[in-house]
Image 1 (cartoon, helix red, strand yellow):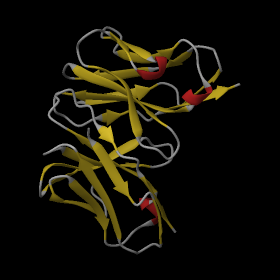
Image 2 (image 1 turned 180 degrees about the vertical axis):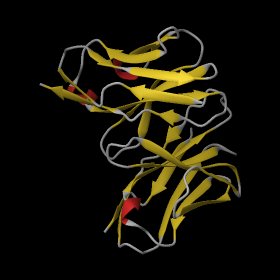
Image 3 (image 1 turned 90 degrees about the horizontal axis):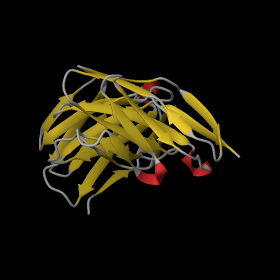
Image 4 (image 1 turned 60 degrees about the vertical axis):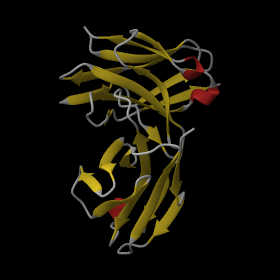
Length: 112
Length: 113
């Protein structure tokens, strides 16, 4: 069994300040973890993924995430938010060939 | 490179009418294909997935059905729409990679009135 909890439904930041979107997971097997971003009325785009290689994963648009097995966490960070980062973000887990399990999403709001 | 198409992009249908949403993938063969529904504030719900032509697995019992008549074509249907069928429908595919990454289409916004 696998599950994902995104700890915040909404996060508000000012442009130029750091971003932290929190995700905890559970999985019976070694997981693969993903962060996807969705802009309004668009499909999902992969930001980054962890697949048992380096625990610090760098993605597109300056985002990165760190896999912490002891904390069962995979938090998404960015040093400096940009207005174009405003979107909904999904943390996703899968194990082996099982289907993906999505978190409920975190809406990131960026103010000028 | 691989691309995934969905149509229509938006659809407004009356309650009780039929539905057909189409998804096609280009640039790959024998993909796994998925239909998701995204309702407001509820994240993504997996509806159906298919590992090959004619092979459909249903994750949630409801008045929707799916078919895969060709290798790279996945269709979502309903005989009679309900108000609760409104939402954003996403098609996705993945290939032989074992890490599970899926690639999503642009989605169809369905409003049932």
